[in-house]
Each structure stands twice: as structure tokens, then as C-alpha cells.
Length: 104
Image 1 (cartoon, one colour):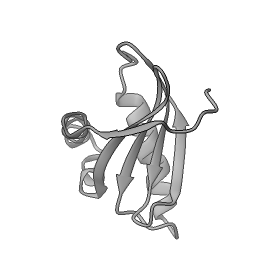
Image 2 (spheres, one colour; image 1 turned 120 degrees about the horizontal axis):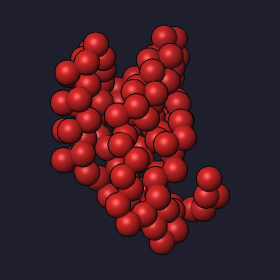
Image 3 (spheres, helix red, strand yellow; image 1 turned 90 degrees about the vertical axis):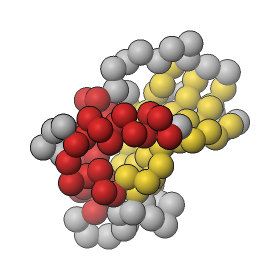
Image 4 (spheres, helix red, strand yellow; image 1 turned 135 degrees about the vertical axis):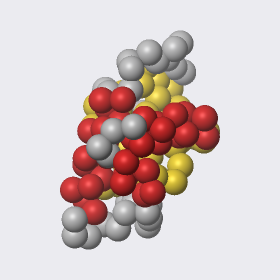
């Protein structure tokens, strides 16, 4: 796992819509309403993390829901990183706090 600073952030609306469509086709459909944005965080050259921004709060059951969302993303991610390597998915709440993270 890289231990680098983020050098670039870029939103990917197409990937977000594909992930939400996949969620809609599974028993995880209710999660789609909570996912707002998907961002690539370039770490160094071709290493990157993926950040999923939600409306979850940092208290109560939302942390558990964020963990389930991260696990769902890992299941959905096909491993085809293109020219780079995706290391982690990070789920952030409405206040920007990191609620969950999983290796890809």
C-alpha cells in the first residue's frame, strides 16, 4: 500500500453511475441514495485510491453502513486498474470524515 500524499483529485461521474447501477441490481439498492461522488486520488504517478463521498454521519449505524458500502465497492471493483494501481477505497461521510476504508 502506498504511503504518499495526494497529488491530484478528479471526480468520475461515469464510474459513479456504473457503481450505483450495480448497487441497484443487487440487494444493496438502498445504498445508492447515500452515494454522492466518486473521486480518484492520485498518490504518485500511477498509484491511486478511490474515495466515495456519502451523506452518512460519523455517528451511530452509519459507520456500519459505510463499512458495508466499502465492502460492496471492493466486490464490484473488477481489478482492472488500467495503466495504474488502485490500492484502497475510502468512504467519507457528509462532514468529510473517513468512515471506512478497504483494500482493493
